Length: 118
Image (cartoon, rainbow, N blue to C red):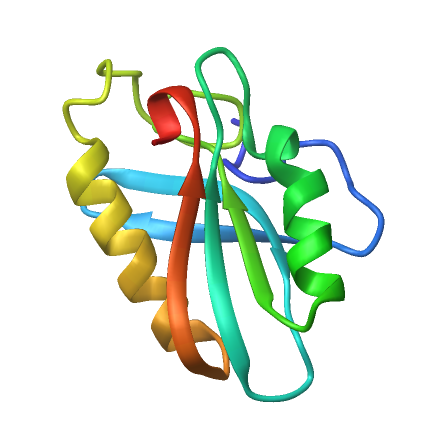
């Protein structure tokens, strides 16, 4: 059995993360700051996974933000079956809540996504 989040390729400078859901997990990558900082959640487009948003996540991290890029339900790195966005709003809310509790977040918590991640 593959553990969601662990089937994503390793990325230099990123840690693999998993966000628990009531019916599975969202897997992805995290770039944490050693100090209090704002945070950003990045969501990929159709046919991609969390690695697609690694470039923008690195830019946020270089600017001093905590950054998390997640794979949507049913895409590489996350469990479940893609439901064409039906569970997207709930999953996004849970991921934002998880992010605010996992990192030393101070200031805004924002989301950046495109296509189905928007």
